[in-house]
Image (cartoon, rainbow, N blue to C red; front, side, top):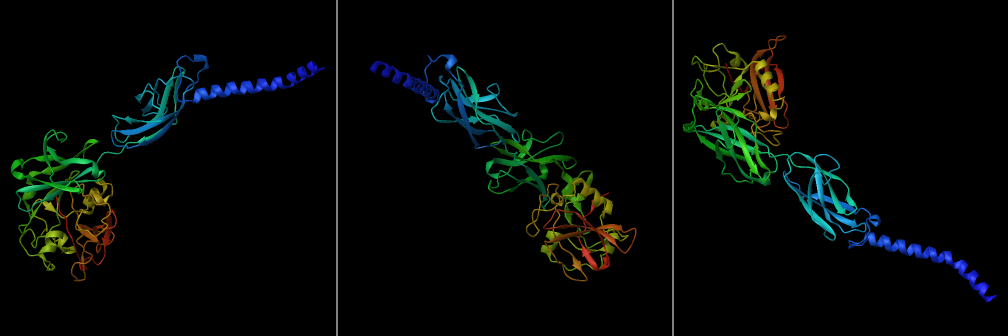
Length: 425
């Protein structure tokens, strides 16, 4: 009876013992796959691919970045290689760019190199054992846009040099050199003629003085600002410069620069002569200080702008409504490309002066007042009267807190005095 009882007990507990044994085996196998060491003698049939996670991408520059990963499970086999892969398309593999680290316990970091600026990349970690290669989560990032130097042109009044400059619009901390380069033909690069700025690299704006004696004043030069940074060489937009620009004088002996914008040539400063082309004095001019005249030019009545004796010197004229409209269209209605970066009140929204027009906020005079709204607005007469109402004369305006180029038919035109900017015939 005792033997039969024992057999019954054994039969009752046998399934339980089998289940516990199976759980123990599976637990050991799972732990074996997950542990941080593995043997080469594990049968391939018992291996699984590794499990790996991707770490965040950091230290992103125009040409490099850093990422990494962590092997979470070995899959029962020894890790032969681990690292990161990247490409410009999603789901990069070890057939794309990669940086492998071999096997390292814990997290690992790897560098992404030879990147291109302004480009989106996809990156993920990988780990390889004898069973195969597995990948972690995919992340994407975009390398920064290069520096954007902007050319400005500023006349130096002694006519011995021309001052050329630029402005770095982003990533100022990455700049190691900057300056101006120029050529007569083709595209200007630093492989040709150039001058390096000695200005502090902490300042956004910089200038170089080019002696006119080193230029052929009968020819037109192509000029670009440049910067050199850890992202390589970056250039600004090409602008044109003529060596004779310093020699333009008005009927009163004042000197002006020329600025080529598209197929138009404008004077680079507001006009300030007291005389018509025939030598007659212009009536009704305000008595302005030398400081104001040097910065903003003179203010003229609407009648002076259209007087038959001609305000402009030989070869020049007061612009028409169509001239201003063409200029506005060329810059895409962006007055910031025309506004000087100085001589405006804050915030001087969008001012880059990238076209070298150097529009300043000279204000205006109304009903016999002195200049008002200096630094806030700039008004410029055209010679065009309204076809619907000849008492209205068109003017253009720029403001300190916007970039719109504003076209206005001015009423009471004979009671206002405004700036004039001449255009070449």
